Length: 489
Image (cartoon, rainbow, N blue to C red; front, top):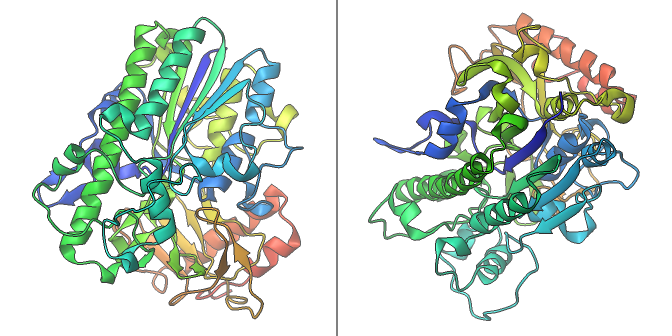
């Protein structure tokens, strides 16, 4: 079975944006009707989790089908790696990248390598794109911002917008549509990477007003990562409204792209995949962001459901003869997307790329019920266990947030480039401990049941160590995790 493949990634798109589950405030929920319609005609994998975290490592997993957190960090794509577009090109696919996510393209990061063509829509976040206007008015007090310099750069990059088509998600979708109009009669792989709804949040005003009209306070469009107590209740609610507004903007333009796919008659022989790299805390667990950044220091926060759980919706070519609106609750991860694409293209992936993901097609066809019993989500493990590093291991019922027993603090300064390519010194913040949650009884992860369910935690920990060994992780990577905090092992 060979089909065209369109892979759409929306950065920082929380899984609960689907099905109107994201609540801005009492009585107000995010309404993403285009992606909702797409989901109702597709197969939704309701228990999808990212593997490597965040943006750049996630794309490394996606392009290789591997759990790269055992040997890779936020870094340029190595030139000797065999990647998905390289293999698809050899199989006769025309491969195109259209992206506005800056971190995979700027500063020589090479993620365009292997594609026949690529277009980078400029202007997101700290992209060094424009130098004017000189005077920029900040939307809030500077101390509330994660980076004043990045906020100014983003405002400069996007100065002078008038119409919705001037916003970056619209530009990205329009480029994708133009490419399809010229290439729809070829066998193709189209990769579309939207950076939104990643912050800074600055959708057209009417998208914010639909969720929080009449707000007249400061707009913290690029909040400092960490405990969210520095924000007033109204500011935090408005942040949730800005995030929902930007997600709705993305939904509008993803829908525009989906409509064009239909208009061109591509649905019968094109597989369309929609997913994200991770979510974002918007007040949950008393956090804002996805890690902790204070000045020149960077700490790693636990990866709870709001960040580790991702959307994954696939409309297979000709729907594989299945009805739309199917939900599958098997645990799946980002590398499985790669394996699935290779099978759809008729390629024996493991012989080319040594991939570690598993194709989802056997689950879809009903040949298998599960492909794994744990999902592992983590920042890179190659720099040891400093800065509060914890690994999240998810099962069908449990979420174990695992903290190593030793090595939390080190004397030498270690630099990280996550989450935006800017160098910061790794440093732990707050209490670092192992946590266990029963996702069936406590989906919001508010009650740590580690002491009551020690046997469960020990068993999951054992499976995690076995998983690292199966991946071929080095002893240097595995050793710090043999003994973990709070476990009787």
